[in-house]
Length: 331
Ligand SMILES: Cc1cc2nc3c(=O)[nH]c(=O)nc-3n(C[C@H](O)[C@H](O)[C@H](O)COP(=O)(O)OP(=O)(O)OC[C@H]3O[C@@H](n4cnc5c(N)ncnc54)[C@H](O)[C@@H]3O)c2cc1C
Image 1 (cartoon, rainbow, N blue to C red):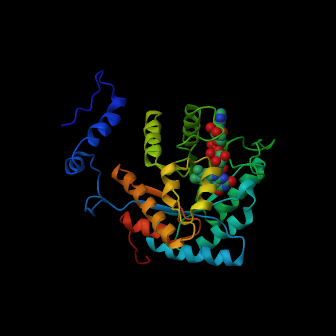
Image 2 (cartoon, rainbow, N blue to C red):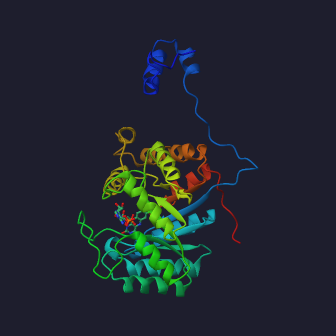
Image 3 (spheres, protein in one colour):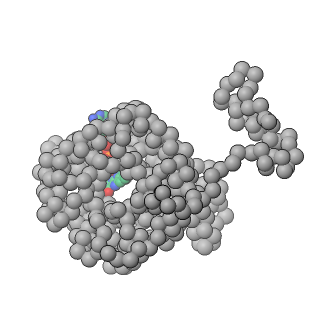
């Protein structure tokens, strides 16, 4: 047995002490004494496959439209609980988001959720967009404050607008009986005055009528699991669904993650080092990283996942398969 307690019994010394003890052992003893991790979950009759949702962005060109629809057609086979379509910064894709959501509603069996932001718009204008969605048959909104159009600009509420996402949620509830999802930040929203203030804000959004939070992307499973602990301690009971971004191209993914305020851990950078000229290797590493991430979450009881697909289906499809979700025949 390894004695894990230091002389003063302090918990934080445990891992250092274990490392030190392990270093002095013969290899086989070390292998057999080290920590054990749960394996890939086996199929089980008493555990349903997880619920999945997929996020798309509205296409800008005809070629991107085709790419999006190839992606939708592949992922719809997995029967996600919903698919969401983003709203460009500052509300810049209002028409394209609406067109994409309408086409999903008209041409597929999928349940679309429209992202809607309140930045730069009056309450009346935002309510009109929501009302139009309701009239068209859209029943799920992802309600967000949004960021200003110019990168790095400071958010200033429109003089007649909703000041934040919690106000937007309350406004949407007055428009119609939407299902509403909101954003959550395992690493704390960059503008929040403190982690607790950000958590209070998430609670306000749920208390205002949202029924689900979807997290900003993150790479360390631990970051998310600790956040869940804090949510539970704050009295949050709604699902806080992890937002997973499979990495197919590390450079752009890294820039995107950093622009969202998500930490790109050193281990991740090192995994992709030397893969710049080898797209196939990058994709394989991306698949392993995302599979490991969801496997750890699933082993910790998480059974709902939201994928930032970036309109590319392959990695998401493979990871869904690993999670136990299989292609299903059309209803
Ligand atoms: C799942 C997901 C999807 C997204 N989709 C889009 C999209 O489609 N389009 C887009 O433009 N952006 C999108 N975003 C980004 C989002 O718009 C930005 O992160 C934005 O900066 C914050 O939006 P929010 O809804 O979280 O804002 P809020 O919940 O309003 O919070 C914004 C900040 O203000 C603080 N705050 C809010 N109310 C109060 C208060 N009363 N007192 C003190 N502090 C307060 C919060 O703590 C936080 O720091 C998405 C983010 C996520 C996680």
